[in-house]
Image 1 (tube, rainbow, N blue to C red):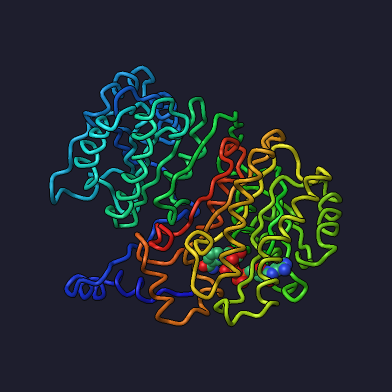
Image 2 (image 1 turned 90 degrees about the horizontal axis):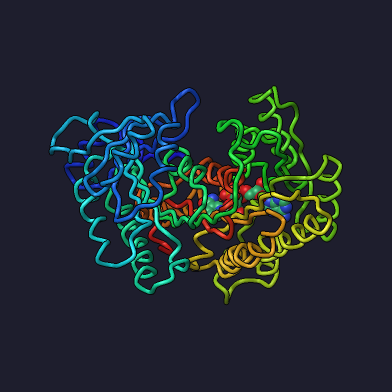
Length: 476
Ligand SMILES: NC(=O)c1ccc[n+]([C@@H]2O[C@H](COP(=O)([O-])OP(=O)(O)OC[C@H]3O[C@@H](n4cnc5c(N)ncnc54)[C@H](O)[C@@H]3O)[C@@H](O)[C@H]2O)c1
């Protein structure tokens, strides 16, 4: 659905009206676009004492073609960069009114060596100097440790404190700038996560904490096609977010098996044909008609997937709402929402795992919701089901580890789809604006996040719930 306010305030007339009467001015977010470079420009680097991630950071920035500038807090950066023959310079705080081309695309702070709250001062020094220098739709990434991996209470405390800092930066930065914290276990591979979080593909992901463990991951042969050779099941693929997931996974190289209910067959066929038209070299994708809540659905789906040779990625996107306050809700409305949004996924996964239809090294991604985190009036059934999706991720991550299978969830906030177009106008406007980006997300934002979690480079990311909500105030 069109956000007319966003268009208005980004017109010359609308911008001056908004400025003069103090209305919010959401930025048109920079998203991935064919033919436009994803990376480039300058990354400013800051650090606390004893940073541990300079080596992989340099390797990454060099491979992305970014030039780094070192803030005075990142004492060791320049010599290490020089050893690698990469481009770097010293960071100079931007003078007020300096031209926009002075701006940096990313601020990256290595906080992994911070082991005491007094050392958090280094964050103040860096961000105080640097935050005004970030370009619109720029990126802020703080790298820390998982607090629970710290042996001393002081280190745990200081590492936990990074969350408050990062989330506040996301709220202060404005201009479509995101801020995220990556908790990196010693030895973990940061490339996949940083490529996503520094790119326009993460346009609507802000205020998140991503945990990466030390599971070795295989970098894809081609970062533009990380899912080449993979087969992906996407439920609810006929329209909305599911259709966008199918498109992005196909764009990233996967063969997509799109599933939807019989009533949506025409729309599903169109979605799948559009994939073939857009990426003819991949050949036909597969449309699979089934109601995931039907008793025989797990067998039907498993048989269809086995006939294709098994599956590498499962995206549980199909979902329904039947909103009413609990006192007015019918039993059928409760049961159907819990069954479609949660129990059906459990039954399908159980069979796909029992019969090894999902290959070792596979990926399961559930679509939760910020309603599942915060609860929502009139959505006891929906919020219960979506909180259950988070519970699945948390409970299944460890048992699936032995098979190299990761399980994660995305929790969309307000996304512009037919589902949210049905919300009454006043509530819809509130849902759209009550986030750090002052706008709703697009289905593609959810899809890009799923494609990142599905990548072979994300082997160390499991048990995570990543909100795609523009840092919504709801459930924050
Ligand atoms: N739109 C949002 O703002 C938003 C926010 C948070 C979470 N979500 C979640 O994202 C997912 C997609 O949402 P959407 O907005 O695209 O919804 P949508 O209603 O536009 O699409 C859902 C799709 O799932 C299919 N589906 C429903 N029941 C099914 C079943 N039993 N078997 C197979 N397919 C079935 C539908 O036919 C439809 O094609 C849902 O899980 C939803 O709860 C959406």
